[in-house]
Image 1 (cartoon, rainbow, N blue to C red):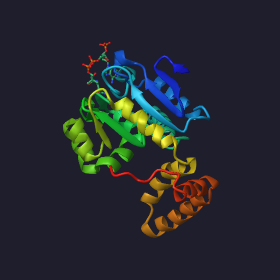
Image 2: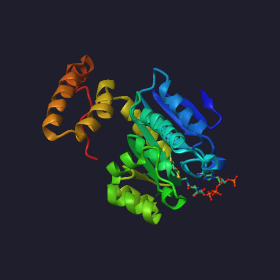
Image 3: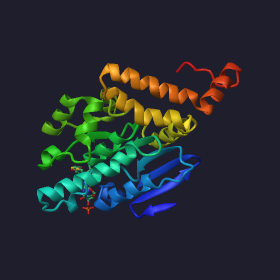
Image 4: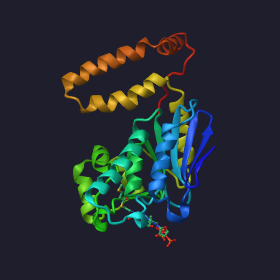
Length: 258
Ligand code: 1HE
């Protein structure tokens, strides 16, 4: 299954594997590539239960395609940024949880894309930066909303003011990735995690993508109430009852020590 010359979609069982296929330009995100990304998440095959995003070549993604950065007036600049928002919102709030497999450069808009995913797996070659600060521009793909939620406002401010680059180990330590794996194994780990995610009840995955982030933003009193509603909806699904029954009958896996 193919979508555009710079973006490829392939199904691996219930996992949609979305690959940035523009390695000669370090998977820089042109307007066409952003629109293709949006399209692929809007039209995922019905059998998809989880997705992996990865990049071909030595780098995950070099961010905005700087060769397309033209003179835009303020209104056009807003529209361009909103186009990114629409695409990355579909990654975060689309039909299925998304696991990013990161290696090499995860910079600028590439980090914005990674931060829209639900799980980030980085190999030891990964490095993170926000070169917007030194290019005289600002994040425009949702980075100022999503990245502080991962690492805090102070660290993002430092990255943009000073050009600080985090290596893979430090990136995992501060929360840019949840998993750190040996060089060359990020995709395999991401796929294994996505297959595990794909086995969950769809309503549980939906709750984690759509309810949890909203609850976390609510005042505690409202959050507790929303949580009760979501819990009641999830546990009333026939699939939840079947899964609990299977455990009680000794037919489902126990939690194993990590
Ligand atoms: C590009 C881009 C790009 C590479 N736009 N063409 N992002 C940046 O500021 C990062 C800019 N890129 C880099 O710092 C480096 O390219 C990398 C560290 C990612 C990789 O280095 P390297 O040595 O492997 O590759 P390279 O030789 O620098 O680049 C290979 C080619 O890709 C070269 O083109 P060529 O025709 O000379 O072969 C580069 O010009 C091209 N290339 N990165 C266009 N980004 C919604 S707002 C988001 C705002 C941002 O993302 S700003 C941050 C932009």
